[in-house]
Each structure stands twice: as C-alpha cells, then as structure tokens.
Image (cartoon, rainbow, N blue to C red; front, side, top):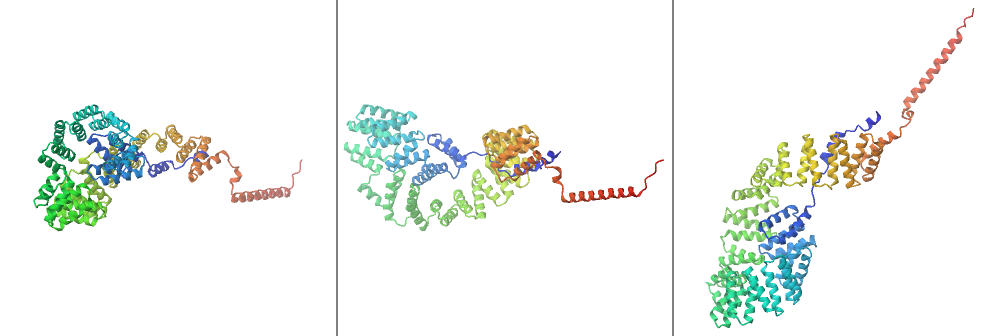
Length: 636
C-alpha cells in the first residue's frame, strides 16, 4: 500500500512537460553536407545540376565556407575575378582544407601570372579531388618550368579523366614538341582539333610547328579555320599578321594587327578623329576591351562633354570589374544628363558594393524615375530598405516588383516573411499561398505558413503543412518539433508515436530520439517498449540523465526497486541538479529501511499517551480503595 503512494507521481503532467518543453533536435550537420556537395561542384558539367547544387549549398549553410565558395564561383562566372578571389579566400579562412576553393583559386592565380601561388593552391585542391582543369593547369606550370615529366603526368591524368578533352591533348603535344618529338606532337594536335575544332591552343601550336617547318600554307589553313570560330582571339590574328607580313602582304598584315589589337600610328590617327568612337565600338564587338578603352579615351579628348562615351566607358569598366573607374565614368555621364536607366542602375550596384547605401538608394530611385517598370532596380531598392528597417517602403517596392515579375517565388517568400515578422498574418498568409502556388514543394514555405495557421489557431491546417514540409524534407527538425507540440495539444497520441518512430529511423544514433520515444510508450503504458527505448538511449549515451531518471521511475512503477535505485543513482551522478532524482531515491530508501513505528509519533501523541497512563493508574487506585471500604461477606 505504501509503495503505491510513493510511485503515484503526476506522470501525465510530467510527460506533457517533457514533450512540450524539451528541445527536439532531429537535424544533422548541414554545413558538413554543404561542404561535401561543394567539393563535387568542380566535376559537375551539367549546368542545371550545378545550379541546383549551388542553391542547395546556400540553403543548407548560408554562412559557411561552402556558401562563400559558391559566391566565388558565381562571381567568377560573371567575370568578377577579384570578388571571386576574395570569396575563395574567405572560404579557406573558415576551412583551410577546402579542396574546391583551393583548386579554383589556383586557376585564377595562374591566369594572373602568379605561378608559385597557383602551384600551391592547385596541389591542395588535387589532394582532395582529381579535377581535369586543375591537372591541366598544373601541367602548364610544370611545362613552363621545363619539368616535362611532371607536365606529361598532369596532362595525362586530365586526359584519362576526360578522354575527349582537347586541351589535355594539346598540352601533351606541347611537351612532345619541346622534347623534339615533332611528329608525335603533330598527331596529338590533329587529334585535339578533331575533338574540338575551336581549341585555340591546339591551332596555335600546330600552326607554329608548320611555320617552323616552313609550311606557311598549312599554317594559314589551320589559322583561318580557327579564327572563323575564335574571331576575338588576338593571338590568332597576330600570328596571321606575322605570316602575311612574311609573305609580303602588308595590307592583310595591317588588318590582322588591327583585329589583334596591336596599336600603330595609323590606328591612333583614326581613333583621334571624332568618328573614332565607331572604331572603339568595333573593338568592343570583337572583344578587345583594353584597346576599346584607349580608343574611347582618345575620342573623349575630342568631345569631353560626350554623355555617350562616358556611358560606354562606364559599361566597359563595370563589366571588367574595375569599380572605381566605372563609378567615375558613370558619375560623369549622370552629371552630363544621361537618360539611360541602366547607367543609374549600374551606378547603384557599384555604390552598394562599397556600402555607400544612401548613394545607392538615390541611384536606384533615379533609375526607376527613368524607367518605372525597372523591376531589378525596385528589387534592389526594396532589399536595402528592408535591411535598414524601412519596412513600409520595402514592402511597397516588393509589391511593385511582384506586379512586374509575379512568377518570382523567392520574392513572394521574402515578402511573406517580412509581413509575418511584423505580425501582419493575413497578408503574410496570402504571400505564402502565392509561393506555394508557384512552388508547392518548397519546404520553408510549407513550414512557415503552418506557423501562421498555428498562430491563428487553425491547427488542422498547420498540421497539414507541417506534414507536407516533413514529407519534402525528412530531416526538418523545426517542422517535426512543431508537429510534436500540436499532436500533444490535440491529444493525437497515435500520430505522435508514429512521428517519433520515424525520427528514430532517420537518426538511429541519436539518444534523445530514443528517449523521447520511450516517453510516449511510457505514457501509453507500454512498459516493455518504453524500457527498451530508455535502455537504447543509455546505450548510446551512458550519462543520459533524463533517460536514466525515466528508467528508474519506470522500474519503481513496476516494483523493481533494486534496479530503480541503480538507475537513479546513475542519473544523479550524470546530473546532480535534478531534484526529482533525489526525491525518488529517498522514497526507495524508505521502502528498504522502514523506521520503527514509535519514531513517527509526535510529542503531542506522547503527551496524550502519558496522560492516559496517569488516568488509568488513578482509576485502578480508586477501585482498590472502594474494594477495601466494603466489608467482606461472612461465609456461612
């Protein structure tokens, strides 16, 4: 009877408290997953897959080294090499062993002529993964240093990874030619051009060998074919110019030098004329940006107040990543009254990069004035306003942007989050619905609209979207935690049990998952299953204080006091601050060592007992006195 009293704790309330107050973490190491995915990117050739992987990396760990690497890749893709270098270096600061960042940084170093730095970075990259481009770059470095065996090794590795890589074959051919194996070099170069007729290096190398062999016609044939594909190659044009000059064709030689960007006195004279801007435009069209810049500057001397030339100079500098020069040119164009919205938009971007946000805001607003349907300018203005806490204007600009580009699910989501954060639940709900209409499989949108429904007391709708989020992403800890809370609140214990079983399946090595599952079994009075879950939790983590406490409590409940005491002692050792452990242990000691009955009597009880004894004694004496006063009957 006594043991029933000591174990009759408010069990249901305890389980509810643990279920609702405990931190239910089912997630894995997302940043580690992002790094693994990032290290695979250099070998990914499919553009669609690459784009999906890049987005997933940023989604998994937006502030991690992998995200910095993706920023570098994207910057490099648009030609902003300096920004790419900075991003790769930030990635390596966070993770010095990040092979993909090292390899890509090595390629840029080689482009900049920093061969020693390139060799170090490429070696680090190749230590983690064999990437053809890195091997080819190392082959080039070794070739330039005349380490021909090492050069052949790296080019060979690249060719083995991608047998159709014309660049690797061309690199091997250059090594063979340097070693005097000319016939073998010619064979490799022909193979390279068959695989890729646009391979500039193979055409130049083969034409060079033919020139050395005094086969100028063969060299011209190779160069002409190649230049029709690579019309912007200055090296091809200049090599053609040299051959034409040797053949005595000065006019064609001069023309090819012009196309090759080699400035002569005649070219300078043409550019200095007012119509020289047309020649500069032609140079831009042919990809000769440095020469085009010189031409525009010369033309600007003739017409220093030309809005058009400043606009064009700004555009070239902007594309090249020469931000300071671009700002000067664009700013001059705006002072002179430029009416092109792109000028103000690009200037806004440049200011934003320098964190000159006030200037950026002004530029974006002027771009919108020139072109009210300039969606990208509205988006950038909205982002700045949002970041600076000007929520009303940010919302206005996001709404205007979405009118122009209603299919932008990511901006609908951004707007929904702003509205939700500012407690405008009705409008937030509508924005989340717009996201889910465009992207029904978006886990964040499902989870976040569920939170809106939960806040509005619409628990059925909330549970529907939390379940959808978990269906899309099984390791979504936040959705699982919220769903647990709702199941407890709605008393859906069977669904809760299945949810926690699934959690154990997803992360079987997490002791907390087994412990929580044990709580539900315990609540449903399935003692065997509960005990098994608690034991599994302790097996995975021997000092899991809560699992040990729950195990001890269950042993007490089933009368196994010796095992209960052992589990509770372990729980107290694991966490001395848990008061319930001490209470339960004291109860067990009372069961094992009952105190004699009299020790439980109060002083009041002792006094009353003493008084009772005195009364009894008086009664006995009184009776004795009565007996003595009555005469004894005489016997007959």
